[in-house]
Figure 1 (cartoon, helix red, strand yellow):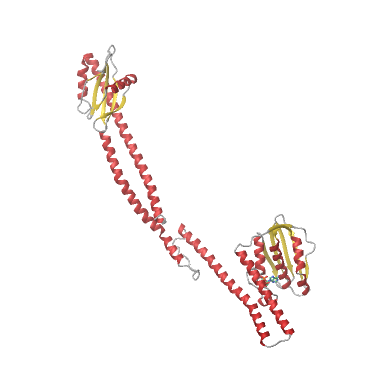
Figure 2 (figure 1 turned 45 degrees about the vertical axis):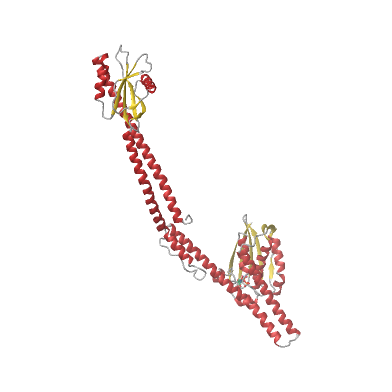
Length: 475
Ligand code: ADP
């Protein structure tokens, strides 16, 4: 159940709503209860003060002995729903600590020792003292005791006691609780149902998207998710997914193209080998003819293994399975070494390869990969430069980079092909590349090595004048 986002959203929203609702109800209830109690307290205090003032006035008029009469008059006219009593303390009172002068029908339960304590407190404070008492039904009551200021020469301490039942408050609060008990679950139920449908409605586009996405496979990678609103979160998600599909589609296309190109490249030498073998075996040949055939087979086998090697290197690079083995090296030494390696090839075309007096430049790189990159560039420069041409390597450095240029005065590369020469199996002149024993993977390897070192490679070339491949590597 909790594996569904819709369910989780609903549960979470209901939980949050429940917490908010319960907190709000609780606070409201507490506030109301406090208000009602304060109101009641204020009411008993006011009544106590009014009664005390009235009694004091009466006492002054009627003199001492009229206490009882005055008390009865006062109590008779007490406010509605209010208990009122007058108490007197006496000098040496034992068990009979107070005299009660009135006894209304509904009365609070007041115990003698407690009253003694109240009277003492009221005596000390001279203001109404509030107490909570039992009685008045189940709710109890609030009671105020106040000492009545006495006339001079009068020894009798008289207190007025006013109490009101809390029953009404209890009933109000009980009604409120009932409302909460009924309305809270109902509201939560409504919130759950509404939340569930809202979540369902908001997640409907996701359900539709996943349905569409599910139907997309390698054969219909060109299809895209439908976007109802480009600018909302789901629209952006769909756009991101569509962009991803676009990239996957392009990679797939690239892969398909690469596989087709690769199989074509592999098929050609294989076809030549088979053809040569078939011709040689079709009838007896002289040893010279067999040698010629074997030389062709050897050349094609070399070409095959070169293509396979290059493909493997690029495949491993794509898979990230070719970690760099960086080490400190003098790049000028490496260049000179590569120049010596291509000397024979260059000499066969009477091409001069100049890489003398290069500055000593140290850098941290993968020696094997750099060698492969430089050899590929030199190899291309010699292959695509006519007889008696020249190839030159320049090396320089900036505080951040090492710059290596392989410059030839060969056939050059037309501007429209310049962007593509780094693509796999791309060749400006297929026949020529084949004749020169090219695999179409030399420059892609150069690009990969440069980029693997966080560097770049670019081409500046003018057809008929020559080409310059510039590699920049961070130091
Ligand atoms: P190839 O094995 O065919 O040389 P590369 O990937 O090394 O493949 O080069 C791709 C193509 O770029 C080549 O077929 C060639 O047409 C062109 N090219 C590369 N280097 C040079 C150069 N120095 N001068 C002219 N054309 C070049």
